Length: 235
Image 1 (cartoon, one colour):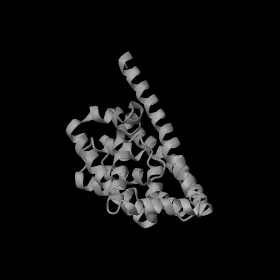
Image 2 (cartoon, helix red, strand yellow; image 1 turned 120 degrees about the horizontal axis):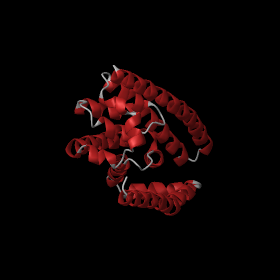
Image 3 (cartoon, helix red, strand yellow; image 1 turned 90 degrees about the vertical axis):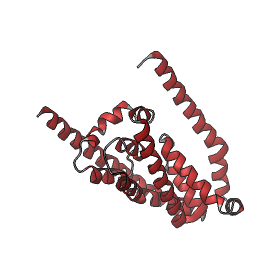
């Protein structure tokens, strides 16, 4: 990596850290403060209703943005969906956003190729998921990985788009496979919005346990596939 690229990468990381801090201080903390009281939750609901039909549209755009940019954490966005629209509609709107984001990612990658993917996927991730490029059971593997909590789903979407997977089947796989993780986030948000923090904590802890197990399972799958790819290469 050249000195110029290192400087750009460091600058980008610093910018993202500062952006996350700013969003936390000026957006997230005031939002949480409002959620802590009945009056605050009423204010949030009234604000959402004031946007009318544009409220769900804006939320879907926010969901699309965080997926396409990949480095923005998706959990908080999905929880906000549950807070603003309830568990069911929060889930529906998230899934709509996931579908459109997948379409955008796939078509952008097909147009710009590996240079675009390099902007969001590290070389380490490329090596870890290299088996995606020659996997005969690609669709099944992608579905399983995207369904497992704790996996880098947006990164997987970029990498899968480099393969020869059928675009329409990929749109369907990417949308359906993420339902379990989105459902838990939407339910967490809904219970927060209803002023039931204890239930929120229970869902969070259960999701965390499943997520940790998912990370181990994902690592096992990727490691076993890497090993098989290496064995094929030796032959």
